Length: 166
Image 1 (cartoon, one colour):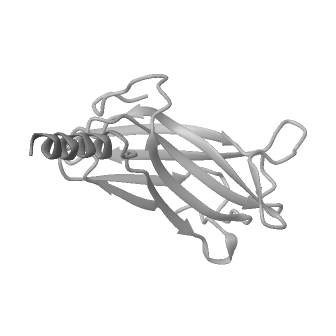
Image 2 (cartoon, rainbow, N blue to C red; image 1 turned 30 degrees about the vertical axis):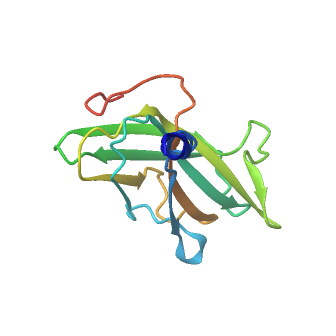
Image 3 (cartoon, rainbow, N blue to C red; image 1 turned 180 degrees about the vertical axis):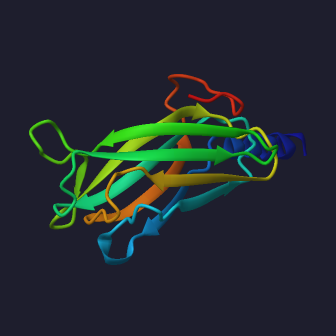
């Protein structure tokens, strides 16, 4: 009996210890491959209060119709406790020689992953909202096919708390 209980306890410890942290990925497809200026993206995260810091990424899928080198965005993280984080970023989707950044997707598109917040901790119980605004000067932004939000286990660089902001 003692060997069986030891085996069960060891198995449980290995299962818990080897489980991978939760990865969140939510996608928004754009109708006609066009992110219009006043189209605010709304993502939500709930139940990640395990103390694991996560890198918060945007994955931008774009094609040759998006001719700009940069995609300026405003990001607002609303936590369940009422605190807010405001982040303003320019995402450079093309190099200085106008070649696309990121990985090729299909025949004519690229996926560029941009980390907008490193080692973010979801510390409050409840639903976090991530609102992303297109901050370009143009109303129509043809060539942007999809924006995905990801919360992935942190790579271990900086550590930000929810009450801090850029």
